[in-house]
Length: 129
Picture 1 (tube, rainbow, N blue to C red):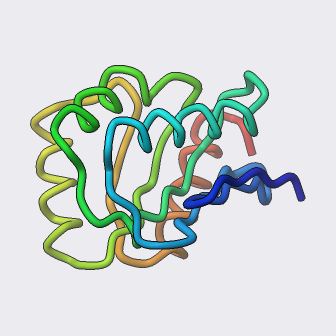
Picture 2: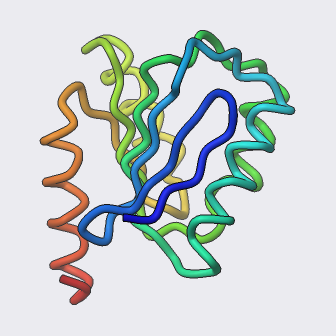
């Protein structure tokens, strides 16, 4: 299994799905978001990915970091399943995505198994399974 990490986040690819998990509570600063995106590109080696992004461990997101991720963070992705620690956060994210209509499908989940299932369904639908 291929892995890369820095001092606050770890990435690995398992069953053709990119996974990430925070190693410690982390602030969503623009510097940290840039580091996350750079590390994701490093492990992906210019191959598009289905990403299971575990948000548990992110303390907050600064507005400039959210804007940067919105503009630069979708490159190299087929879809992103965000694993969140509350049903309220999941509802807010999913409602926002319906309004925003991002170029890369993004959906929130409270269970990692549900996130993986959704990504695998997208892979099947796209003939990549």
